[in-house]
Image 1 (tube, rainbow, N blue to C red):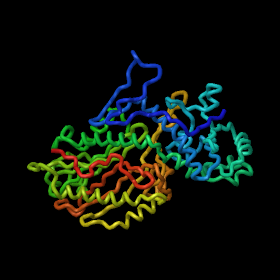
Image 2 (tube, rainbow, N blue to C red):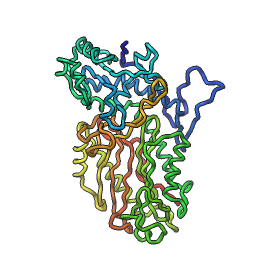
Image 3 (cartoon, rainbow, N blue to C red):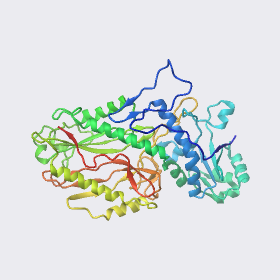
Image 4 (cartoon, rainbow, N blue to C red):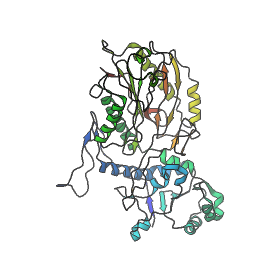
Length: 469
């Protein structure tokens, strides 16, 4: 049984306004039943867990109708064959290409045509996508014999297949094996290209993350001289749990402290190498400290990556010292210069090389561009209720030679429109009283490339410090 994915009307997700109050109604009504819980931060309403699954599935349907035909044409591919055992290539990411391409219902329950016929829970071994003038024809070959028959019938000029343990596939293709090319780039392009609604909703997700950090970096949570970095770490985890939010990594909370204050307080001096504490070292937040976080949240399968900073006022201070205000301004100017080097078609290596050539303004001690695709997660289940995907995947262009623990990123990949990046340059600025190492104020955030420029989604700390009084 074939399914045709054609371009056309896409189900509306929900209305994005000041809040996310109007979600799509549930089928069949829910009077007298338990209602979806509505959660919120200071500025944003959060969809229920049930609605999140449905929204993610709508995104995949949109991508099948729009992204897959586009990237197959872009890469010159007529037939795309995916095996269900290519997952080992991606280490712990369980074959995200296969898992995101297999059909599923509105609840995220994955199925194939075999399942519809016999009611079994067996997952299809092969997925095939044939590009036609009207869209994509989807076929589930049962075995290698049916793959041989399929290519003979379709006579594709270019066939994309996996590189991993693919001798049986090449044998099945027979004389068509000469037309086979690696599906690596095609798979990455499928995974990394976002639906427009995903980018719009990620603005919401980044806004929720910013709300949580602003709350944590305030006197509602921090009492100078009492609250520890471990207290803050656990506060962030508890707050995320309260909001039914997941996260890929535990929050990391660090302290930067003036040399004159390191000896003033009781925390072990060895905890402050170069004036900074390290993750896993519990330090009490004191007046005059800079408190930094590296934190993420995961909602609707979209993951943030936030690095932000707070200053704890000294007794007698009513505002952040001018030297730190100017340091933050320099960091933002540096980040805007880095952002301008994201030019369509450049590889990750080329973007970093261009960034390295940017002159550093006076007072900038060190500044290095770093970026990687943010982790993404599609919540899908087998018919028996088991999770089909249990971990996020990371796919696309990065600044470094790799991104542990996945092999589907590389700095040889090129920059394309509609892709997302955890944009996290690290910049240290000289500030009077803060020692030779200066103050490190890298501001990590999610940004997207619209084809012309890299754009911030919900830019934090463009000019303002978080202040703890």
